[in-house]
Amino acid sequence: MNRGSAGAGKGKQMDWKPLVKEISNLDRTVIPHSRLEEDGMVFSAEAPEGEPLELILYDRDSGEEKAIVPFPDKPCIGNIRVLKVSGIPAEKVSYNFKCGKEILQDPWAQRIYGAEVYGEKRSGKIRCGFLTDSFEWGEAIPREGIPFRDSVFYEMNVRGFTKGRRSGVRQKGTFEGIIEKIPYLKSLGITAIVLMPCYEFDETEAFRRVRVGAPEGSQDEQRVIVPETIQQPLKSESVNLWGFGPGFLLTPKASYSASGDPYQSFCEMVRALHHAGLEVLMEMDFSGSVTAEMMLSALVWWRSVYHVDGFFLFGDQKCLDAVCRNPALTGCKLISEYFSAPDMYPDGRKTAFRNLAECNRGFQNDARRFLKGDEGSLQPFLGRARYNPKDTAVVNEITTHDGFTLMDLVSYNDQHNGAREGQGASQYSWNCGAEGPTRRKEVLKLRLQQIRNALAMLFLSQGTPMILAGDEMGNTQKGNSNAWCFDSELSWVDWSSSSMSNAILEYMQTLVRFRKSHSLLHQERELSNCAMGDYFPQYSCHGENAWFAPQTAQDRSVGLMYSMKGEACLYVAYNFHWEEKKLALPDLPGKRAWKVVLSTSDQKNKVGRTISVPARSVVVLEG
Image 1 (cartoon, rainbow, N blue to C red):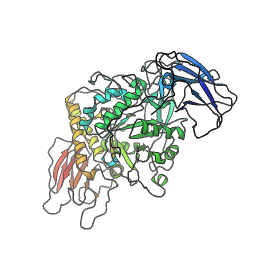
Image 2: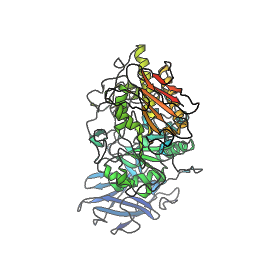
Image 3: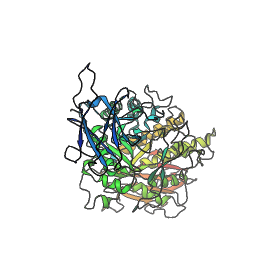
Image 4: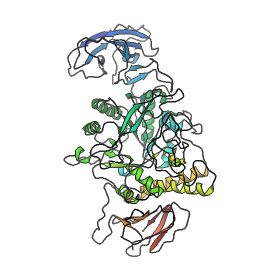
């Protein structure tokens, strides 16, 4: 594929006098953003009427300014001015725009130069460029996509995942570092990694996402949240580690590349993960002034050029809805905080692949309250555990980058953020009897059990589970729920090994295997609570008496039975009361009997016509 124009031969001094073609009419060869064509480079920029606009050309490697080319005074369309430059090879060029006295970068840039050192102030160093390279993907990997029902997501920050001193990788904090960790990722049983913003953003500028309310039409008016990007002061020792905020949405982050070529590094990472059977999803922040056209172009670009499998989307929901309906994204996983199926599919879903999913704080908040044993928390959690829409999938999370880690959720009552990070939303946390680090054995034992409980709630519910990198090892941020501005051991994954971390990791791996081997736990649509002829309902709730579900606000225990013809029945007993509870077990047909297969407690379980469930524990039985 010819990505650039013909240029100077080897060993010859390059002529920087470009051949310029002014384009005043929009025709089939021009689109209103910068791009490469067979006969040259098309540059497109916005400028107010009457304002002088110029193109600055630099030597790509040295950054030396080589030529200044004025744009035509007459716009091509609206406020967009366009010109074409030929006679200079695109692979030798970087560029910027100058409007009046201000130097501007191209939001449609395919490459960014001058941002190779992480945390370094940019101060006018940034230059734009075109993608002129090609990547050898090798043997084609089928890309039909892993269904949401069979997926397990793992959210990570590219830098924070391997930057820690005990990560054991050579290329710390990079795309290459993730490649080195593929054997570990495979051992977890996950199916996809979810990358926090890894397109080019300025980490020295302070932006963070805040929660401002529920989308219009949402069924979870108090729980669903939408992000809005705001700017705040940033101290010299801080960075925007998370990466949310404005950015160049078409190019991988240069400082995440160990090789110095972010295009090659990102492609190599995706190829390696795909060959290992793992998908790659990206979090994209479309907050602020990002247009629907830019959203769609960015998603299609990452999908086609970088072979990305899906996206977590943040931004104006109505705009996201319009973009996600585009047929160019059919078959691509698209996750937002809320999708309205009737609006997205007014005539019903036509595609076999369910590619839209919602991911909001509803499950997280309800599960955390039930885990604590809060009054009135049982019924909301039961709705979350079963929730599995027909047309749009659901992604569940107990923790995410924004809030407490799983270890901190059971170790702190209060947020220990400090003045500059501010206090986030309620964490619904409980420290199990001591605030922060402790040597009290009974507290540590309870924390481990609560972590197991939280993971069980996540993996035994119907939606796609997503875990935060490091949670499977008991990673802590010392009670900080908003560590967006820390580029340090506080926010990096801690790869230290301990008896606690090993126990958490082993239990999570067990849960992943158990979920995968029991299709009842990950169906394509919501389980029915209606009896099927002479067989049990697919889903039923039980209390002290079989078939009678707990109803009061004081109830903190329940037995959920999953049943489907041809498969063994499952009974998940939840007890988040501080005392042992007995739950009734429905009689099984024939010679079948209930047998305990998983428990978050070390205590023995007495099984007969009832199951004795220890305080604050989850027990799973198979029939």
